[in-house]
Length: 436
Image (cartoon, rainbow, N blue to C red; front, side):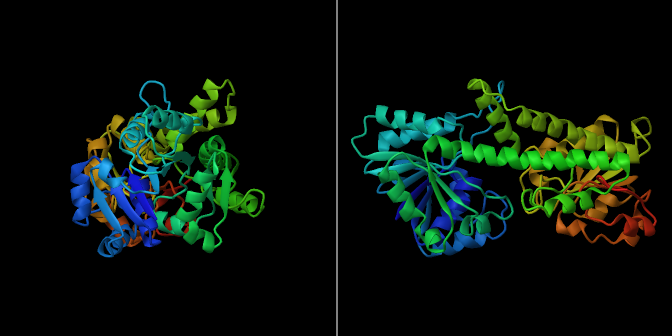
């Protein structure tokens, strides 16, 4: 089949490359000429393990191409995916759908054959209805269907998630849409990946409900971690104890500095706004958003406490290890590290930071933070070391060397990647999340 992917960002590029790897003829479309030029040169706009190799292989095989022309890109396409951004709209927190609707209008003006238009972007309930209206109003004479097909990709593991999905959700209102989507996903269907066909509005809500539920699990265990610290319990054992219950499950029960990234913050907020619009408040999600927002600065205060309190922190130095919201990505969107760094610099602390992939993007977001080229350069002369993102490179620090070059042996582990007894035996003052 021929597939057009409008939007060559995280979702569009990963999805397009994977579809091409299945044997489909894929064109990735983006208005950003510099991005397309870089892709032609084999330079990826994002960091995602294995993506450059996957793109290169399929470009070489002739199955994956790039263009800035939507009219040319969608010509002859059986399925046209809309994979543009839907950021939180300034002022009210609703999802900004202007890019989605602009693409829909351009598709309608340039549709040259029968095709299925697929919203891959994360969109609120009812967006597909509006896309359908836009296409109808364009006056196109060609047959079309509008389908919802949300993505469930984890940054850092996106290729594996696409090729071995937990489920594929397809929201379609007619057989034409369902039939084309069956063909699009036939390679996965043959591998017995579960495909759930629903109505379009149901599909749109599934994505938001899934992310809100996962955000709730994270926030729940973070609050349990705070309680563990008060009562002298160990949150990691609590997580294991409740995660062994199949009704709960072990995933997303790792205590830390709060969730961030491209999905959870904006999607929980968009769900709240949708619920308000329909006069059906989601109080649990509302609490999750509030707790998570306040937690990030609380983690900054935790580091200040390790320095002897905010009143004693001015002029001291902290080594910040990890800036991205999670490892194996360069995504800084809503990363807890931003709030932690801001809390520290507000208190007059000097901050030196290292991240394996995120520093180029992080630098303009943290103008008062000094970026260095390796972890020990950040640790040199530090009064405290704070681990904010659990990159593998931080899991095996030479604690003897750290103690020698740091000004004070103080380690704040916001991801619980070290064993307290081991670090304390090495002569460190050690604090973590929800553990003694």
